Length: 186
Image (cartoon, rainbow, N blue to C red; front, top):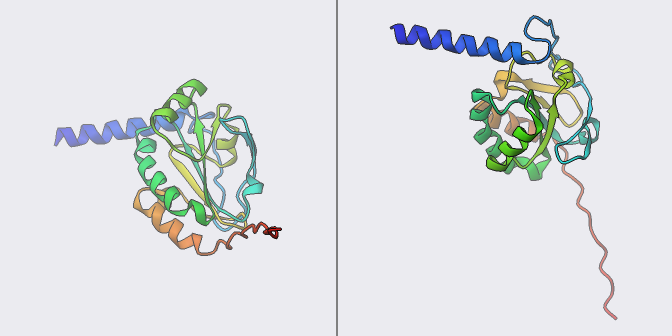
């Protein structure tokens, strides 16, 4: 019985540490975006130096996922993220992982050992986390093809992630295929 009580206390302590480690800490009254409303837009530089404008991903189903390499629950979500990305990326699904409080070198090293072949941003100043009202991680947000927030947080964890993506990917319009005109053989 004492071991169970200790485990709960340890988990509660970890949750408080995670919440307070984010810029502004848990005492900062952040307002999360509201389901059904437009997701907060942002522009940022990806880890590979490219400019990302969230608005340019309109037309896709986008998972914005706040996480950190040092966060055990975040790392536990990686297999689910990989699975859903591999299954739906060709159907208009994209993941934008936003790392909070990770030094750049540490994040890049982690990604070498744990391949996550989607977009990565480092939010070292906490501006994106603040924009989304993030006070603890992992904090996933699902944005539909029109830019509206359709699911968030616990609805997007574990096996529920696959269920939510499967439900919402149906609404993503098919991407236009580019046809290259054939030249006449002369």
